[in-house]
View (cartoon, rainbow, N blue to C red):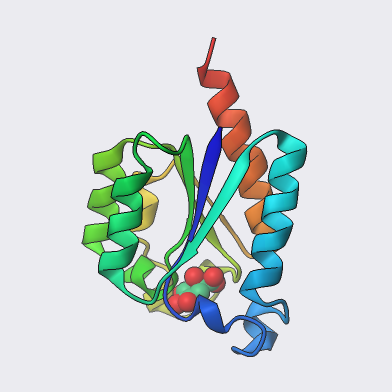
Length: 147
Ligand code: DQA
C-alpha cells in the first residue's frame, strides 16, 4: 500500500520560514519521519512538494490507481484553490488535510479551507506531528474499508 504526502507552496522553506509559527524542522526531516512511520504501519510513503498549483493537481491525478490515499498540506492554496478541491473530488481517494499551525486561530482569511470540503478530515495545530497523526488516521480509514 502506498500513501502520497503532498506539500504545497513555501513548505520547501520549512526550517527557516517563520519558525515561531511553523517549527524548526526542515521538510526533508518531516518527510523522513513520515517514511519511517509509514514503515512501522506497513505502508510505503511517497513525498512530493511543489510551489505550483498545476504540479500539485498533476500529482493528485497521478495518485489515482497508484496510491491508497493522500495527505495534503496545500499551504496558502488551501484558502484559494477550487481546482485542488475539485481534483480531490475527482480522484475519489481518501485525503486528509494537514496544517502545521492552527489555521482557525489565525487571520480570518486562513479560517476558510476549500480543501476541507473534499477531505475525510483535517488535522491542524500540532506542528509536524500532524503528518504522523494523519498517517495513522489514513491507514485506519483504509483498513476499515477493506474486508
Ligand atoms: C499552512 C497554513 C497556511 O495558511 C499557510 O499559507 C501555509 C502553511 C500550515 O501548515 O500551517 O503555507 O498550511
